[in-house]
Image (cartoon, rainbow, N blue to C red; front, side):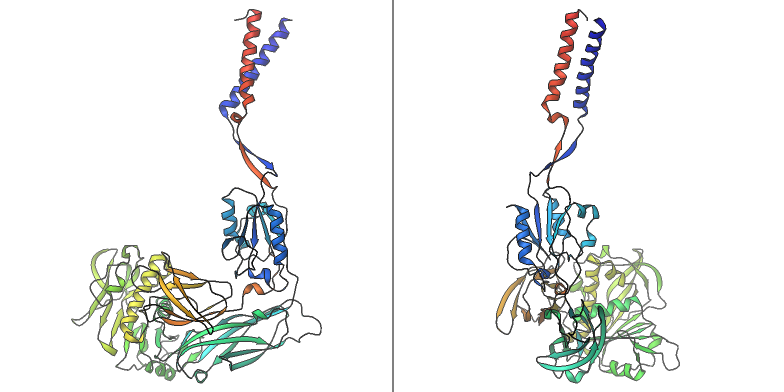
Length: 591
């Protein structure tokens, strides 16, 4: 009897102590409460849902059934509240929608046709938890024009060379088409050029089509329609692309690179963007050749004779000479011509940091830049300015010692001269952010001063691309001096006029969503004029196999955080065990 009571007391003591230890430790764990919360449903609202074979209505019904009266979000190029109107977005981005939905802590379901643009950026473990309902489109045959590449600004005497990428996807129906088609380029209802092509069974091919200057008899904006004809397919909305080109009466800028380097490559590209004038680049591949070096067109690598180079230089408003000055000895340049020299040989190597600009014609556009944050140049070519030369920018080796000039200005009118004595300034543009903006500002101010009225660097803003695919926003970039601010833009089509306000963010970018049409824009209170084409084409019209497949995903429900202290019965158990032990010991007369 005494032994049985001893084991009983021990059991009460162990029970009370165990309950007390668990309460003091208080481990946290989670559990799933199945079926307590309806999932948040993400509905694919990209154009593919209403393309050939699209099942938009079926997708809407599936989303409503999954939500059970709960929340539905549309996703595509952006996230929007649910409505049943047909989709308008030209891409399908699921990752931002998942990130936003995850913040709500609810189970997530996705209704899509499986054609998601950024599926590869979503973490696999996160993707496995999603419930996915795929309403895939059936296969169909489609021929399309994928892209059109070429110069968007040319001179009045320049040949426009277009590279057209076209192709086909899907199985050709027996008896329909023979794989033959024609690329037709037209403008304002007038055919400019055509080319017979063969379509692949599946894939993309390219064709180079030159358009001589005689096809563009007047300067200004030209909207080219590049269309694929002759092959019957199920989706005609992707058979054509728009290409906008500006024919400038101003003679083009010619860049001579001997030898070519990164500085001149970045400078030429940025100059074309900010000055909005045609830029032609010639590179000298064999500077020591007896005939004065072998010249090539940097865009096509096609050989150019010295006579062709001299003819281009003679008709240019601005000539940029970069590299070794000895390489341009046989190229004659007119005296009354703006010129920029950028020597890169014989430089003093080191880390040269730019100082804040002194008073000069460029100072206004360079004010307010964060000069301390710019990466250093890798070398400075010695320069000896005279009394007629204005030093616009200087640099110091390792931010110590004597400052040396790196941007010099001289002359006036059509005979203005500039010299850039720094090597490696392209690193400003390569880094991006504030450094890239400083590089753009420097190039813009140099072009504005050298070209005078021939450039358009005084523009406050301009579209990044003059042709935009259906469902994608028109992106505007701030180009003016000072902080970006809102601008009013007027858009004219054949049938209507609309006014919008461009609201620029801190990065100097603004977005504008427009339906497919040709828009001639004008910014209020400034000289900015131009053309923006919003195409009928979209990548979403083309057939594509589903990237996402239907899956059940993680069990639907709500995850709940639980701890032992949330259970009242553990406290009762500890108190009851210790109380019972005390009463039993008292009854037995034990201490």
